[in-house]
Length: 132
Image (cartoon, rainbow, N blue to C red; front, side, top):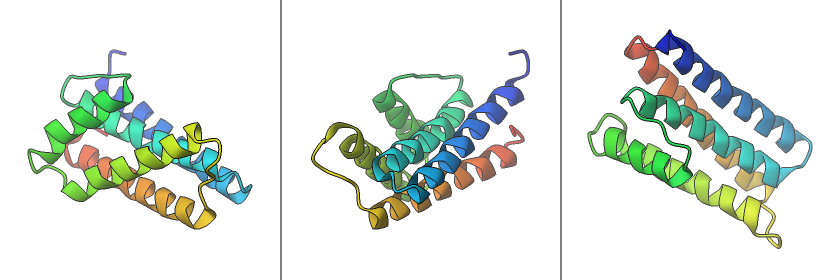
């Protein structure tokens, strides 16, 4: 892409789409899938932030580590967002890999609210930086 703003727009668009699909999954009583999609909403939003530093990672742990290094340790984002990211990532791991554990609807509602808050915070920051 010649226009970096288009990349930010696409990251945010994908993040929002994942949150929309998470809500649809929740409404259809697919709690594990809802957790998965909520996590990917955060993953895309965090990837947009990391892109602003000239970086890009496909590995989930690398995105989280870069987010913490460039945005939490520097004080750009409150530690709460790192904690929420980790909580949602752990929920996604449970939902995706533990066949005997179903994430309860009430827990998915919390996951989705945290994911929505994270994506909104990222959008505000990108807009403030005139990147979106």
